[in-house]
Amino acid sequence: MVRHGIKDKVAIIGCDMTEYGELWDKSQHDLLFEAFQSAIKDAGITKDEVDASWIGIFYYFTGLSGAMVEDILRLDGKPATRVENYCASGMDAFRNASFAVASGAYDIALACGVEKLMDEGGSGLPGFKQFGHPLYPTPSAPAMFSMAATRCF
Image 1: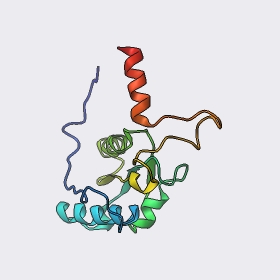
Image 2: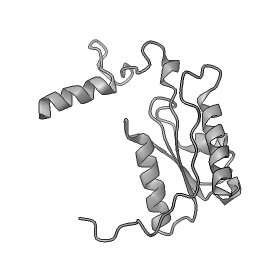
Image 3: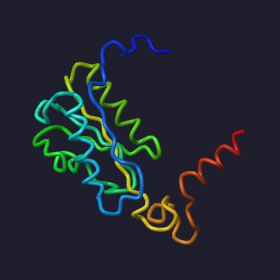
Image 4: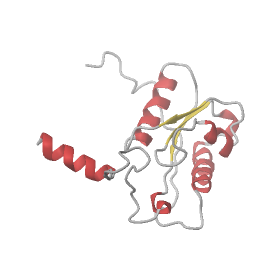
């Protein structure tokens, strides 16, 4: 049970999302920058007012830090954290940014996420060849979740 929630300590002051679809002419960097520009405009702030950022991303730049966000969004010198939590990466970035504001560590925190699964080729959602067994195929996330559901229910 949560003793003290954060509902009265955090507010979403701006948000945006890029067009959804097969955007072959745009990179993940383009999509992230476009959504960021629109979100800070919606919030009525400048990029300099963002104190820290969290990015939820799984497939792209796996193993690298959140510094890519700082670079792409030109948030020079601001703390940037990369969150990888499978299909919940974006939600986890949002949760961490919210807790950072609620704790008083930052006044304005950015939570963002980006994926371009169709750029991987095939059906759009790749398995994890680079993480799995070299001989046995590793299933995609939906396949693993369906196997877990079958086992648990």
